[in-house]
Length: 534
Ligand code: GDP
Image (cartoon, rainbow, N blue to C red; front, side, top):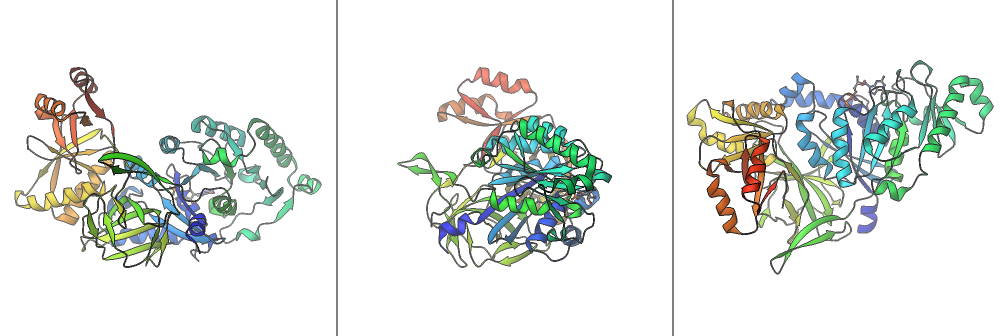
């Protein structure tokens, strides 16, 4: 198959939701119906076995949250679908943001009783910033939930884009009769139960109105009316608008009952985009020039959007997750890390077939491959087969919470340094080294990040630390147009300067006024709340 055909049949998407909306359940059903797994319950089971094999995931178990996000690949209707899971807990939102940079679309799961919840709102913002196309799944229709019009209204308001219903529910909760499929003009009749396959559900043509009225009576009539209202209020389906992040197709169903799931799987194939071009910069005559990398470009290029310590606590190796932007990967290929210009020497390269990790035979743009390394790869690194370029857009957010690290046993300094360097590279936390010396500072967006890091320092690096509060409440990355201006600034605030894991200079603040005052005093200094890996 040609490059163009290989990339065109790929779909890479992230699944996002507020915790408990039904993301894990839906993920499992998508895998089940694509044939990637045989037994329902295995995604959950995997969650459980992960706890058993890795110590630091104890935290996850204790709190019932998913700390690590994962990647799964499935084959459906001759398409290669890459599903990226995202951690639901808000304290790990940074990880989620980075996952969202690696996908071409997102599947948003909404609990029909709760509507758009806090965590969904934050994720939506990121998708909106990047104009990521969003497919919406309204879940739990088998429960007593809100009116579909009311839910759509809320989604539209929160997303700031119109909803285009693709299916429409008849009744809900005890009276949930099924969904009308507007494309096929049929009604799929709901039946509860976990064993049912998609083809087992009864379908009735909408043209058979008498039958539908006889069976679903009032519920059907109400559904027809509300659907008409919804159709009147929403624009016609426009794939271009969807791809530009300007409208979202909406599906209704009940994940746990396997209901309405097939429609979502088909939408991923029929509606979601294939791998899109990705922006990079390259130096031409020492000047940065923006370049779009096309997925069918035959040269290998990809970006590390996630680094994870190997689950096995006895091994220090890590997996760098690379989203391929172009080219073809084949085993034994020579690849280079652009930041260091060094050859990448992985001990293994894996793909993520449903839940197994397997050696990669070949991979194309849109695919996620995992390089197991002993270091030398950082979050945001660009990997190519030679070309010198750097992908942009992997975000690091200025932390809002800070702690200083105090080692309980001073003889473990080396272990602590190694641990912090590696955890910083993974993006588990941001590590700042104050320019004037003194204890290292940890910066986080969510409180739980501190707990994970403290736990992992002890479990993986044998460095027992105490975390102490400090006066800082924010940081800004600093750049200046000339070295002299930068020097004047750092000379003025020596106590406030620190370097992060990528050696980028940051200014630490103790109040929101700090930045304003510093900015007034040094109008030519740029203060960045977001650092994009460059
Ligand atoms: P996640 O936190 O978003 O991954 O949510 P889960 O998939 O773990 O689901 C949270 C809870 O909602 C579990 O108890 C599921 O069994 C339940 N659930 C998921 N989908 C449905 C559904 O369609 N109907 C009902 N009634 N419960 C559901």
